[in-house]
Image (cartoon, rainbow over the protein chains, first blue to last red):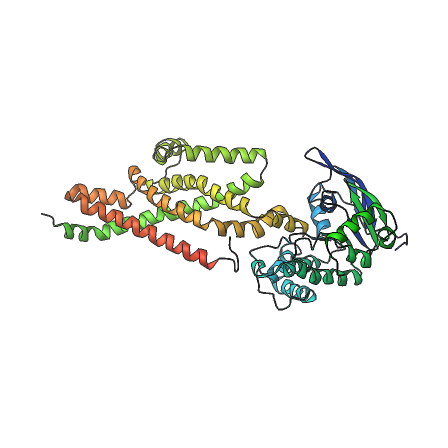
Length: 255
Length: 222
């Protein structure tokens, strides 16, 4: 991924202070089409805040975001809503709509945001849920689904909007170990299918095999960046490697 | 001479008409309270400072003044001042409606605040406007969780509606008082009035319990 085409997403000089604490200190990066960038780093490094600043769920204090060469004017509501439709977001704790079944969770934004009719929205929602392996769970409500299933519904919900990029905020961190695999395999399929993504995760094995670039964050800055094999190799001597080996000690990984 | 049973028996159709009037006041007031209360709750949770301040002031006023005072204040004072020529029924309904709106807004506000924050985030991330998210995501859940509190409020307003008597609304209490003062059978008549209120409370609360079960989210428990 070294072609110097125009990036799909460019994030420049994002700064955010929350409660008097500098959470993000001038973070910049860009994303080429089909690229998967993985954000790693200790808790509190600012990964989550960064992802939420990109689609303005948390308004950054400073900085600019470009989607396909156009800078997002987040103060213009119309522009902001149109931008967010093109940026799928996956949350650590799923954030499904509790009063809607799996099908309606996916269909509601198609109907209310994309103004599709009921039947078209339903057909699309069914297709997306089948794609994440939940074709037989359409009528179940969030409270009736396992964590892994919930996260797959939320991925289907994001995909149904035909996003140009996806932001994934520790999508497996709230899952029981035995459910992580089913979600990772969906994300792996997306990566192989050419989806452009930024993924914050602690899944180092997954990062090694699939990341096009690793961004290591600490104290609100990206302090190291590079190919996973460079940054994470045993004798690279990087801060990233040090962090990962401590994670490896914590979780006996089976990627 | 009046026989106790025959008095109650003969007065019953008259009192039941009063029960209809009472029901009208309560349904009207609860309806007004529902519509106003939802708007006020949304305003208080998501509105700007001015909106929050105005709603706070409204709630503070209607919760702070006795219903009886409010009825007199509006019927003999403010409505007249505003050039409104309302019937006693309309005035009672409106005043009780405005009063319950203050309480209902706090029921809805509590329900909205109890929802996990992430759902609004998720709706925004999908490109929904805040209004869209409030209507399609927040309120359908908040209103479900409000039913127990709302049913409580219903039973309170039903009993407060007896105060409409003082404006001359011919509801249960007014009619019972009228018959009692002419027949001197106070005890049986007020027992009958009490029973009518009890039955209306029971019917309403039961209906709301059914509604609660009907709209319950499958698999959801606290």
